[in-house]
Length: 167
Image (cartoon, rainbow, N blue to C red):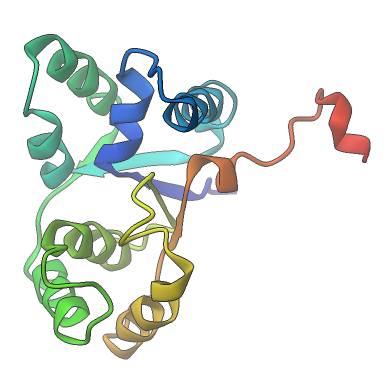
């Protein structure tokens, strides 16, 4: 049986490789990201894109190297005219704001390539329940199954050895 496909978006790899944050919420997100990476990544086929690689290539050289090393373990999707068109439609339809062009392209790439999940910490424009309906409607109208857009916590699931799993 084929494993589900996950598109790894830039915020995920940034949280995975960053130094531990002093901000308690960000630190918690980093911990969940690392837990997902350790416990669940083998359950999925991992994808990223040229767009993520480009975004991850910016900043401190040491941080860039850490991000690119992680991304090198994944299949990199190429930018595609169909994805460009779907991203433009997501923006035109107001599923995402005009300033979120890259976010629309991440979603469009996942939809066009048939990826089941987009893993992100971008809750402003991507993993945002208020935007989900419009995103899904635009993808379906264009003939694509919309990806499930979620945080690592949402895709973590229960570990069999977790003593809390019998609750």
